[in-house]
Image 1 (cartoon, rainbow, N blue to C red):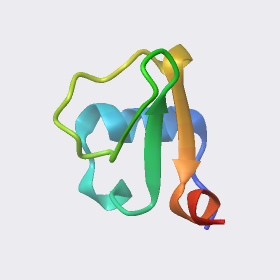
Image 2 (image 1 turned 30 degrees about the vertical axis):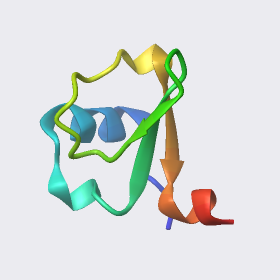
Image 3 (image 1 turned 45 degrees about the vertical axis):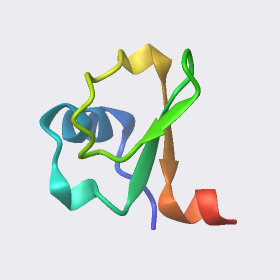
Length: 59
């Protein structure tokens, strides 16, 4: 499954949208930490994020 555009994914991350949970992981380039979209941690700036679809991370 293809991810929506980066802006839509970032909005989902900011709002902790549970519909995106299981579809993508979010990597923070500056820390090397990966989170699910529903993670309660502070949202990183968009320029520091790397979005991974669940499919791309498993292959």
